[in-house]
Image (cartoon, rainbow, N blue to C red; front, side, top):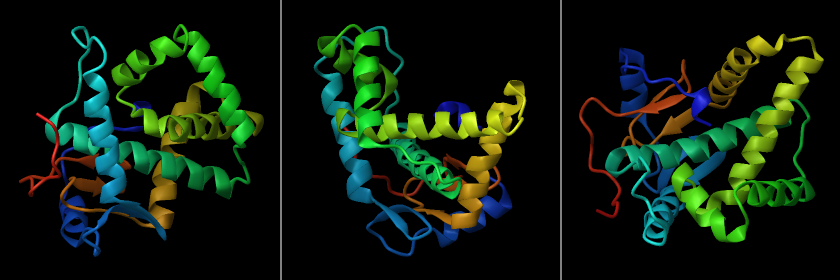
Length: 203
């Protein structure tokens, strides 16, 4: 997912969007009428933190604090934006496809016993694994549709970024200022100039 993001300095326009934020306090973000609740994001944060205690993390560079909060919100936002973009292109992902990809990844990481270590290293909560797989499959299908329509493979990453940005603008993404600032021109959540009170994270 990170390849679709870009680190930016909050612009005046982004700050204005930050100030309007989400009108409902229980919402972490919205994509049009689709709501991502704070409970959903907090569950991802808590699960990621809890699962780190069960594996060897000494060689991992792990996000903490505000960046972990934002990265988990980004995950849900990008999964939602990719699904929205895929739907607009009449592309769907079936449960069977998700199940098949899950088995492929489990085999790639060395079996079920190795999966927790792989998920922790990737910053993905086990409870979000299927959502991650669906996002990957949606991304792959969108990329394939671009190639099938004549887009040179070298231009596909740029086109994907444009598609994600367009999906965000079309469906009006809002982000609760507790998590940061939504920049509609880069489809990225960045730290606020002065962070507000943030959701809790394990220390």
